Length: 571
Ligand code: PEP
Ligand code: MG
Figure 1: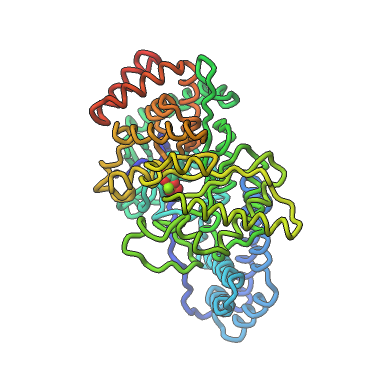
Figure 2: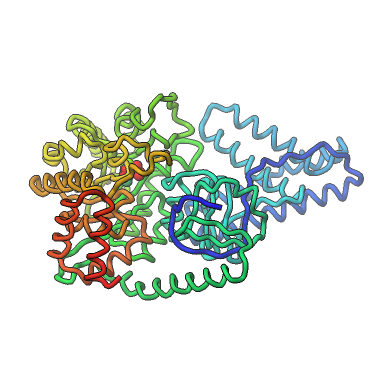
């Protein structure tokens, strides 16, 4: 089977198929009341045991605060009222445990769902989760917990939600395969963050893969082999050994700062979406976070995270690594929030999204800004970045919102970070063209090439039919980046790139040659680039960038970079 490479690498493992069918129990007669009650109690016990293990694992990988949700699940699973109602239903109605449990929990779910309050709506989802877990045991189809994997596995799913990957046992995951999703989907981003090979858009994966099949994932060529022959497997194992040897070779660079052979610092930062991804950042030696996409914290829950919840999540990141460029909510386009009314739009990517949206949702924006200011109170500074700024007016309005949050906290006597650096994403062509004016009103820029390229070429970044117009190495785009970089230097504005392009090895060399101050990428991309830069001089990179700007098209740029690597890096 073929798919799109979302995160490169080879992986071999047993298939773990995650099919999300909602379990339903039929009304069946219970022959013996005691046996049925015992079965129910045993299912609760098993579920509680599982929840305890998941709790433990997610404390390790995600931290105490994320794990606490499972305490609530354990409590709900053992709720005395539910237990009594189920057991009396078995006794009085003569039905089997699965049906009795389903009926009782369904009542609670309905009751919570009907409450207007967001908090209770979220509790309904929690009970549903528990219901499915317990039913899984009673119907002999246990829910698959990705935190409980204990051998080399490749996960096959239609798509994975953030909650599926929470507590994931990374140690045993050798790959992800999903039917859905583009290379910027949640699974893709998580896979890259964790350095796990992944293929997305693999049609028919669920149909053609059986649980425990041996899978060979070739996330270089974009191929998935099911039960491959000995020879193919042996070849792949050889490639995996080479991959591991390369990892070993690069390991010492994880502790170093990035600088050229002639001592010019070129910081390589990581992109993250949740505090969880900090594990990979550390392992790959990121020198900071160049893009913290906060929207994932908002997409991960059934209701709007309040100021306190946000504060905790931001603080966890700020306390672990510095510097951090944190981007305010970038929703809209392909990213919806279940609890925020967002009317359907004819052109969502040209619609009410990112800062255009938060500016018209002052409460939402204010809560986030307050949480950020408070969370960074013990740091040296706070770097806030606004996404999708199109005009100077928008930037001014965003800064006014920030000033409002600051003055509120001042009045309330709450402690907050006063040294705030304001930055913007340069991802709308108008902003790129107007960088000189924008630079006068902010401290830093970060070029979002994912969106900038889609808007420059008018080609949807999720649409495979126009994927050929994703042209990061086109001299047309490179010269636009060069103009923005020159404008930044003239206005004393720091400038980085945080789109996927920054993590492309060839592009990274050119970008530093163009004069960028920092690059931010998927953590797994950092070390090869750092190692290469340590062998190059600034002047060589500048010459490479000049040659690329003069080239005929992206193919010629690739050839120029290849010749450069052959000459200077021996690759
Ligand atoms: C970008 O557009 O390049 C970017 C980094 O933002 P996102 O991918 O989150 O839109
Ligand atoms: Mg963007």
